[in-house]
Length: 122
Length: 107
Image (tube, chains in turn green, orange):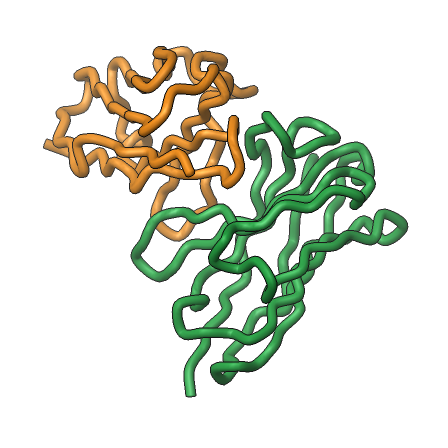
């Protein structure tokens, strides 16, 4: 059974940083691209970033490019999202999601974790 | 960026009836379109990918159709567990984009 467990969220001041983690199990982690999707309180879904199975290709939403960095450690079956220069509008539940392919291109989000909440406030 | 627009925002349907949800794209693309279901306090769940292929374990009452810029999710014989928010997503172009969601409520 595929399991994705996010962690690392919390309350942070504007301009601060956090590193989110997503521990994966139940599948061969390195064979699949992964993504982060966020959802602000009471709002819809927003794609944030994706990474290929090897980690060699990464993609970002314009709203986070330059501030967020996606990475993965295939030896630890873990996906990361380093988030810097946080703003109030980054407040959201951050989900990690597994795609169906090695490349995130042309791949839907097949499995989702339960999310980790990031709150940016002074 | 491809903007995805869903309609209606809220759909009131009686149990046992059919619900038809629409998703329109600002630019045409191939069939790389997914539908997700989200219930309160839960993560989204993939229902449909490739515009019309049901994900594993998804009941046959869920069906997807469409191409180009117009896509539809149809839920036949609505069950109590189907009342939720539904999102479409295009994963054909970067950035991947979601619609704003359609909430299916009990009539």
